[in-house]
Image (cartoon, rainbow over all chains, first blue to last red; front, side):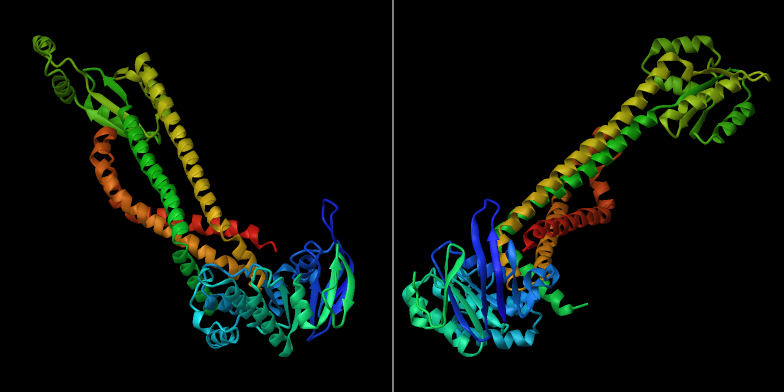
Amino acid sequence: MIYYDRVSKIYADNSVALEDVSFSVEPGEFISIVGHSGAGKTTLVKMLLAEEKPSSGSVFFESINVHEIPMSKMGELRRKIGTVFQDFRLLPNKTAYENIAFAMEAAGRTEEDIRSDVPHVLELVDLGEKMNNFPSELSGGEQQRVAIARAIVNQPDVIVADEPTGNLDPINTFEIVQILKKINDLGTTIILTTHNKGVIDALKKRVVTMDRGKVIRDDREGKYIL
Amino acid sequence: MNWVLIRRVFRAGVLDFSRNAFVSFASILVMTVTLFVVGLTVFAGVILGSALQELRDKADINVYFVQAAPEDRIMELKASLLALPEVAVVEYLSREDALAAFRERHKNDQLTLQALEELGDNPLGAVLNVKAKDLAQYESIASFLKDQQSAPTGSVIDKINFYDEQHRAALQRLELITDSASRLGLVIIAILILTTIAISFNTLRLAIYTSRDEIQVMRLVGAGSFYIRAPFMVEGVLYGVIAGIVTLLLFYPLSWWLGSATSDFFGGVNVFSYYLSHFLAFFGLIIGTGALLGIVSSWLAVRRYLKI
């Protein structure tokens, strides 16, 4: 489904973010990418979303090289990939409901769909009561749940969660991971980047370990070993 | 046309406008200043144009006839003058009119009037006052008159004051002054308008700069360029239209206050009457400029954040 083929990223100042990275992700998989800060986890995610271009190598999504997709068609790719970020990245001037509705509107969904799906997906992340609150009126955990609801509302093939628990306390961290597991159980592929040992050890799923831009381990049922 | 999309874009634009109240207020304020300057320059242009016209209207050539000149010969010359493309108006003053005008001009000068009485007869000849369409055209009119004066059939023309050195110099100076004044006026107006437009554009850029992270998020959730950009353009138009309405409202008391002063001082034009009689044109210019400025500035400002 997703294939990183000998991907390297070297910045202008010769610092190496990724070096000859190759691995694939199968449909329905829950894969965690772990490593210290600066190991290249976020760069990997950005490559998949075509936010960054590799210096060499290619990234394929459903056998299409994502960096050969023209800008005008990029929306289509990104709507197939739901994204969750460490800093939530909600639209501050929109309510929880409107943030999710925006993703649906961007995908060209009808008003009817929006009216029925948004409350449903907010219920799913246990935020039905707060749909009219603005992000600033929500806690960090709640904001991240809105971000997850936004990521799943268009039923993407894959969800990329880049350090989604980085800004959360242990209880919220646990809740977010449980939600991601539930989404994965329903058949959606999950790519999770984290440096939270507790999360990885509790998941008992595939773990790709990175260090200084290289993949140093790829374990089917891995643990956080660094 | 996709009405659902248009409705969503407008709703998003209006919601962002109202929820970013402070940014909207600041942008409207700066745009109001811009549109106010645009309006003021229009007023200044009208006043300057009218003052210059007033000056130009003071210029003429006077053709003095000999006392014995028969009226039909003078009328013949008047007709041939009117046939010239350079001539705007020719005014005929008979000997009697010339005398009456002389008396009026010297009504407080008893000595001159007494001297006139002593003469007994009317010493003045008839006069033609010739006004050209343009200051630069007096030269050719004067040369036509000179030809007439030296015609072999004998001329009734006594004197053409264009060939009076002082009159000629005054006309040339007037031409120079009015030309430079209108050119300088245009340059100042252009600089003022360009400066305020640049300030306005920058303010909108700053307003959109505060939304740069949002634009990136919109991109990452898969929104297309139009869907991201259009609400900002709606906001820009709202800033422009509201600033335009504020400007038009401000001009009402301002032009009323300046009205009589401008007509007394510059002669002719009363800016208040001008504002009222040209209100539709003003409305179109100010609101149109505001909306255009808003839409173009937003379009350009969002463009740079769409490159991911």
